[in-house]
Image (cartoon, rainbow, N blue to C red; front, side):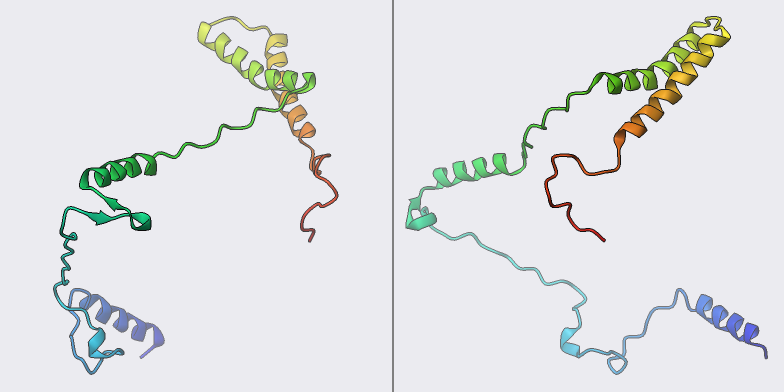
Length: 159
């Protein structure tokens, strides 16, 4: 018998026993019987404290209507996160503004011209494509790869 036929036989046994249920024998379990789960989960019933008065924080006594109002206020505040307002956008200099206009303006002109059915001269087509490529290159070159000038003396972890 070859190793391949042994593997095939093992796979056939696995497939044949796929839908079989596991046998529950306590001798095969690697844990004690006290840790086995019962077939049906147990249910706990928690009863609210009785009486019209409940003690609040610092020993103050609260009436039921005050307690309900506090619960309502907690519900309103709990689910509504208000993030702080974002910082203002940085001011752009003229070359950066022109690069953004070229990046979006070239393809926008081509799209409008194609939808409107305009006849485009070769120089207009070349200018639109060159504006897109030039705007992209200008933005990538202006990104820079160094830390900002105002980062201070500590550049963080250097590996």
